[in-house]
Image (cartoon, rainbow, N blue to C red):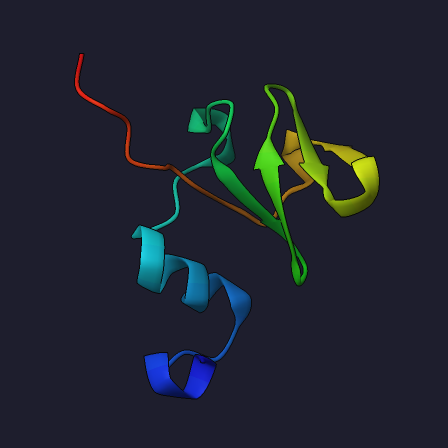
Length: 71
């Protein structure tokens, strides 16, 4: 997958699908977050990763906004 997308890391893979990363302070519940090679979900002021591991949002390496529906 990474070679096909022409990227070298997990952030590149996520950006290829979801666009440029956003500052973690702009992330909203449900947005995608990354810490190392782990991908998780923003849960407000914390990020949740596989196995129920939570870390403060300030400790994530990147965040990507999901497309939000128009109101």
